Image (cartoon, rainbow, N blue to C red; front, side):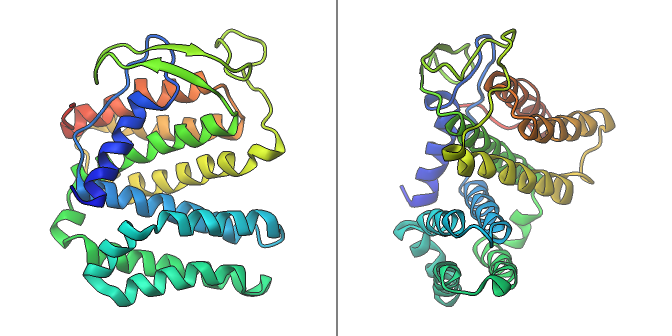
Length: 272
């Protein structure tokens, strides 16, 4: 099993193994796809690089995001990129690490260069016909949303336990943190503390990247206007609720009860 197959399994399992799911909400564990998993990895990487560019005046956050981006390019991931094009792999890795050393005035330009490298890495790693496959992009979006919820949960430092009763069955859970509250609570918009700012910003940044993927890759491919509007409106609502620091229940409900089921129906994504 290579890295991206392993990553796909891991990312899919986050829906049912490591993220908070409100009672009564069904989590979706889609069949892994190497290409979709790679796209999701690149979306995650890009979202962190964007945060580097947005924090040129905050050395602490900038350094933290550079470290997180570099961590995504671990040995296995970089090895697979290098197998396709070693020059690109080395360039992406060195350009990312070098963000710690460039001047504030040059950070934005450097992050733009890295985004161009990401685009070239994707076109090199994934065949053109696969890049035109709307189902692959739908699955990548689903994986992105799993990570959004993971980051958002971490931002609130929520500790939860849950029991997996298989992919498409109701999840049981115990909430073990005062920040994770019933949706009727008066404190459903607990303010995020400063130490949790980075996972919160990652959740919002990855949401923006996910919306871009939907708009650019799926927005013109769907036949049903109602389904298109449902997903688009749900993604826009997700962004708004994250900006408002809504409860984890609200965020998880949007992802698992609206967006993922709609994607599953439209693109016939198979459940494990």
